[in-house]
Image (tube, rainbow, N blue to C red; front, side):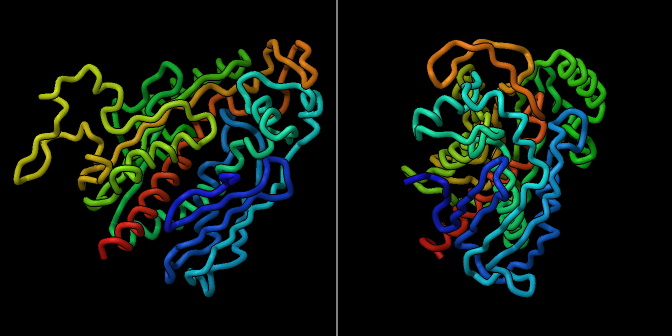
Length: 353
């Protein structure tokens, strides 16, 4: 098993490397009849694209989506959907100096130990470039969920480095700034912080939240197919993700049971510390997931590392890199939420239709 696929009824397989000729995915299990175009998918992909502001990597890909199969006359046919995006702005020469070195904080060393070979160009398969195809697949899932169940999925940047960004939530402004920040009053502070960070050559982490609304109760399966467990696995599969919370998450450690339990009335739940999932099954409330992303490890600041012969070397990473990978993570966590929920809708329908 190479584990380049995920999902049960809705199965997603991705392929390609950061500096290879193309990246792509195959979506198997998508129901027939969904209207979709390459332009719709590309619009979602462009939301996560680099080069849109000075605060991200300056790699600029065209992100032209090719639909190779599974769609006829702009409708899904029920057969496997193959999507392809060519890489048009790779600069492999930027990585020549580290092809025999292991960058600390990266997958260089672990890929080498597992496979005995690695694609050093931009991290190869371990690059966040792979997540482009998750967003592409997620475009179909989001549209299907909205049409069939009016499920809405919305993500936002909740924290960048030390700056909390969602104490004020203005939902309609999230896509109006390069950070996916829900508080317009925080954007200038984020700009200043990122400018300072970029000049220093360092990087920072981020926290991205996502909510799914109008999710029907009953999705998920005990004991090993819990909806929250599969959402956590999906988010942790994203590059640089180091932590996931559902609902109150780690804050529940300090809560009393009388506070944490979500009391029920004929009018509905009185709180949502559970994050919309009880016993691994959706309760009908909003599903809230929070994901922590580590700081970028590709830095121009020298550090100690090893080469493939075990010698200690000084490592400086050149090329185009995000000083905060979490800035572009919002469309990715939205896509993973959509794909997991759609998969569980189809699973539920198969068992309980």
